[in-house]
Image (cartoon, rainbow, N blue to C red; front, side, top):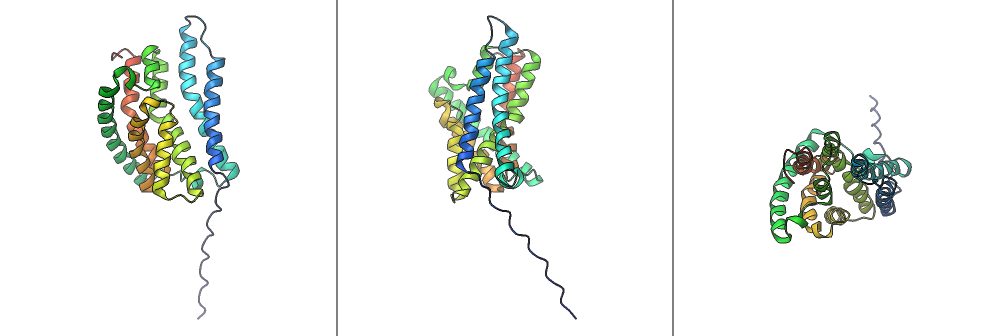
Length: 245
């Protein structure tokens, strides 16, 4: 009796050809697009509609454009986002992300309370919240900002930091804990809010742990969205006049 031939083991996918340079390019695109959008949408006088356009488009588009460039890089110089960025939304990713997101929400709330006492309420809010507090938005714009802060923004940031940067550091041979630590620090610093950097590190730790535990991006996206829900809802309610700033 002839033995059946063994099935061939599929060869591992080739490693991607992008690295730290790709991440730096995406960061440059993020900053340049924000500056460009602000320059071309300068509000004229007391025109509320043009001011609303600056706030909404200036907040949403840079992150979306930068994340789009990151995805394009994985297509042109790698194996696509599913392989290179470990893009996955399995059931386990959702539950792990939800768990770490809720833990992060508790940690962030406690850390924010402590931070507010240390630096004062006027210095404790994010640039995003402060902008909306100073310039209340019409209902449609408030809803757009809520959806962006809750869902779209976290997805874009995770593609850039726990996707592109994480993969670039792994390509350099860094250990998983070192990758987790540096990506969390860069995530915090990249928000360009020096006073809130330590608070942003606290926010980033549970999100990074979700990526570390599962090895996939979906869990950190869920964790980030859960963590952002309360502040995004606060911005929406303030904009609609339901809550005071």
